[in-house]
Image 1 (spheres, one colour):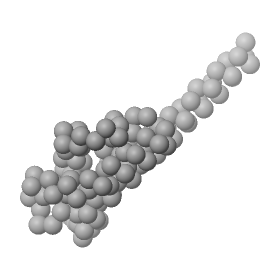
Image 2 (cartoon, rainbow, N blue to C red):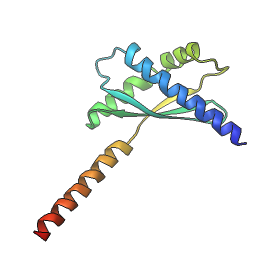
Image 3 (cartoon, one colour):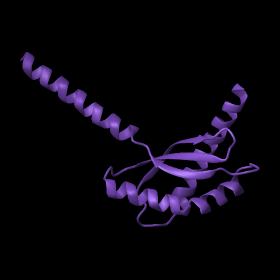
Length: 123
């Protein structure tokens, strides 16, 4: 049973590398911002893949536009993945914004502010 999970993890990692390259080199839509593929979760039956992306600008308009572009290009990206990877079936792609980076930055700023206020209070 553990072997199935490691296979799906390996496929997800390979898909992450291939999608990062495809998005950077093949998608020429001006609405697409600086996008990074942070992770890919593949279902056990390899029918679906959830692709987590981060966008350089954390503005909601840029995120929505980038997600729209990528979801519309999902068929093309799936076709290209089929050509580059040796899989019998290529999973259907669904792009999702990964909020962990933005949340981590916000927490880091809160911690820095708390440390700064503690230093000012101690002086």
